[in-house]
Amino acid sequence: MRHHLRAALSTTASAALVGGLLLATGGSAVAAPSGLPGDFNGDGYRDLAIAAPLGKVDGRAGAGYVAVVYGTKNGLDKSKRAIISQATPGVPGVPEKDDHFGDRLTTGDLDGDGHTDLVVGVHRERIGNTDSFGVVTVVWGGSRGLTSGVDLSSPLPTHRNAIGWGVATGDFDGDGRVDLAALSSSSTGLNVFKGPISRSGKAAGRTGIDTSRQTGVSADKIVAGNVNGDRATDLLVMGQQQSGDQFPTRSVLYKGSTTGLTSSGKVAGGYEAVIADVNKDGYGDIVTGNFMEKAADEPHGGRGGAITVTYGSAAGLSTRTPVRITQDTAGVPGSATPGDRFGWSLSAGDTNGDGHADVAVGATGEATGSRKATGSVTVLHGSTGGLTGSGAKTFTQNTAGVPGTGESHDQFGASVKLVDSDANRRAELVVGAFAENDGAGSVWLFPAGRSSITATGSTSFGAGSVGGATGLSYFGEVLAG
Image 1 (cartoon, one colour):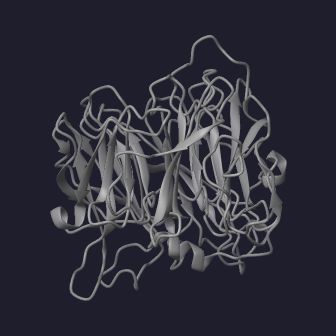
Image 2 (spheres, rainbow, N blue to C red):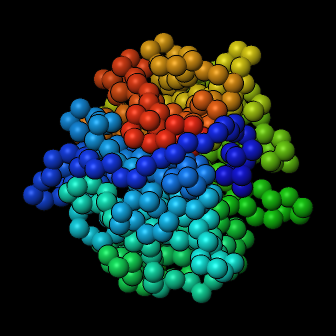
């Protein structure tokens, strides 16, 4: 699975201590919350959650934490931040070795109060003295930002081992309330908790879906978005499907409706995905990333990585032929080389204000000269004709204006996030390199210029800049907001 591959490809170092919550409000409180997605404190600016899942907390190695940086009129402001962990007052649980708090994140307004909440899937959390693992923790947004939280308590599946392996939010039944989808290794696999979710952790109901039995796809990742433009959010389920003695990647779209999620067709497989309207026709398009680049004997024969765009329509999946983009596609800088891992990470947002969603693509295995796996990020632009290589821009740590220098196995681009944190209708680019500095990790911020993302004025910071620990933490492995 992708997480295991990531761990095998990374570098590690010694760990360091991290504290609890930093008492910063994240901006001035307002009389009424903005209701803006990704706005934890309701001030009208989108915020960013940065996971450090291997961070040490209260002396427990790998307990994990999440750093929150709040948006302002000037963009993300590191002075307005908080550290959230199981040592934070009001957040359930206690820090334990290798819980990896933060390695699964999503956001959504689960209680309907107008503030975005943070959802943490703690799939390695041991349940008491049993052999069961996994909890889903909701940290509530409010005028002071993210503070207290609750573990999802009811109605939980009877067998919930590793619940929280994947998390996604959306209005899957179209009733105007945000629901929560969570993966586990139980027989149902996919669990959909009906919103609203109360401050005591109780959902209005739960539906279990056995994706393997229904479609043959054993769920490993879930991504929410609206493909057909109706009131209900759809859900892409990604995983593997056995074919002889091989287990190639497969994805299936579950369409949202008043009766819930139902499978509606297979799409290109991969390990990462995002759903966004790249051609501005009102329908969400599915962009899947396969960093192994599917070959006949995948995963043994990857040639550098690829992404595939499957277009949406009023009927759901469009009859238009899916479009495949690699580093050999016209307009895309560089060339496809075995081991580049193009498509490792994906994010969508409008970087130039033209109304088309653009897509950032991480390639963690990209080399710089003789230095292996320094990593790169390419920004592809949406257009009326769809996602294209025309005008694409690629950034590395060696790009002029970018802080730092690419070193072997930094894996720059392991995570990417396009987010409009200053409310100017142009998304900035956030890039994570969890393996930077022997696994301490770092994050880079790239401004949105007049026409696209620019390296001019880009900055970088590590965990210590936002009150987190130095040393091994994988700071920046996961980004959400």
